[in-house]
Length: 253
Ligand code: ZN
Image 1 (cartoon, rainbow, N blue to C red):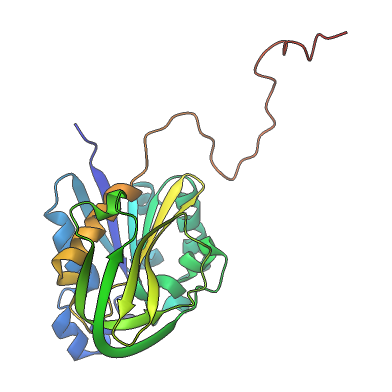
Image 2 (image 1 turned 180 degrees about the vertical axis):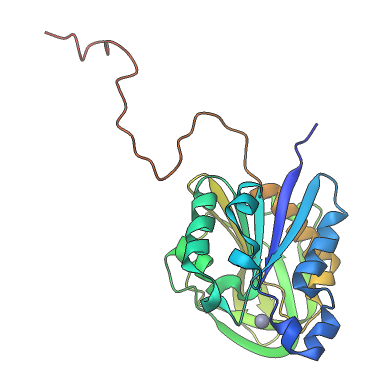
């Protein structure tokens, strides 16, 4: 039987509190909309956390019990404490999956893990976005066709200042002519990271079936693989010679 994947959906949850128009789109918060979909999927145990909770809801206990963390932030990246960023980074390096959504490209944790500015160009006209699959064998695209469309999206365009992804899964085209690397996979230590750009706060994108489906697939892809015997990634021990003696080396005279 498949092991249950423990998911924490994190949201800064500020737009929904400050702007009634956005609260109308996401009455339960962006985290609530994503969590509601994931709770209907088999094999997932779903938890939510927000910025205003103690330690942003990401205590050592919560992180230790999270296999995949989903991150949505926009206007309060600077309020995320560096101690929490350190703890999330350490969990990713030791195997926790991380899914960074939309404006999370400028979050402290994503920039920390990428090591670049993670900047891009943008335009908020509600134009059409066509999301093309450019890695048709990848588990994140299971169940999808060659592309899907988001009728009203915020344009995110190149150049997107990230390291070249380990797998490029989606490239988006916009009506205005720009393209964007909208689905990017990275490996860091034992952990997997997926950046997925759809999801502006004033558009109901996290209710769109294809977008939800991608997030569900990404959770399964990003979940840690079962391994044994790996050290904690911050350790760098001196190790004894595993064979005694090493033939032709230790005993050659
Ligand atoms: Zn946006």
